[in-house]
Image (tube, rainbow, N blue to C red; front, side, top):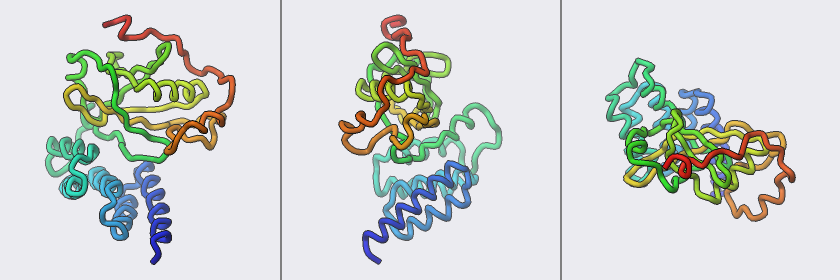
Length: 242
């Protein structure tokens, strides 16, 4: 089997694996990701998806073993580290109750090229707010005059998206795209969030939210004179609150 053929097969299987996870077809996700790992035993993304599938099927023992394989290959892998931390709270099986904590743990960090992005926040909010954050906790965008700030559901300021990403997403939001986001990892003076496109505007059909290559030529394809579908003139939380 040639390398190019095997790469093509793996790409097709990866696409199917992502679709299975997003549709919550967890048995299918186990089968497809296991097949990928037969072809490529060191595929970290497939291992993380497989671990997630085991979690959703209630087998936290297999999930933990799978995430530990990720750590063996990539000891700083944030997805596996965060999932292992959460599994320590639950033991061998997922909690049966549907408390807010268990609901938060269901946020999916499955990566989709062009539709998802992981980013570190800048100019973080006060410690008393950051200390209350939890992995997988949903966070929300508020667009100020020149950038996007990230807040908790209660409206507490967490931090800003980097300036270049803020300007990029402000254009796409004005054109009608929508996004969801959640806390992916936290350390002292460090908050990382995961962003996923949830709605593609008809005006942006065929354009990824997060181009994988140099985006210099990307903007020539954006529609001109964007129609504002969300308000952009909002208070800057740092200037108004802190």
